[in-house]
Image (cartoon, rainbow, N blue to C red):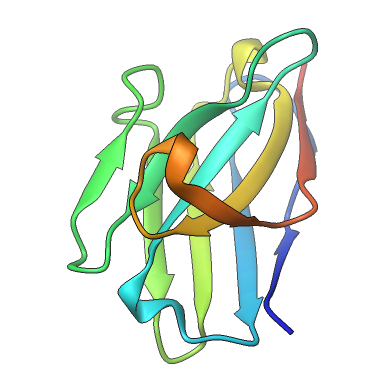
Length: 118
């Protein structure tokens, strides 16, 4: 069945780096937009970065220049390289896929992975 599984979260000091991975199975997502979203305590889920089916990327202003999204179509895996992490990046990070990159169009979600920056 269709499934997204995130990995790579953890705890890191401010200024450090982490790389998240999202393994997709059950479907070939090359025609989908895939992205990373996050939800901090008591806040709404927000978009972090996305990569569309044509390879174009987009980032939230808060992560531009620090985070890089990439996708390996052969491995059906999405990545998020996070550098210069800040306490404000602490959240549960979700991988999502959908027809379009907007949050409201994301229909397939992973279970989430916790990122804690101290």
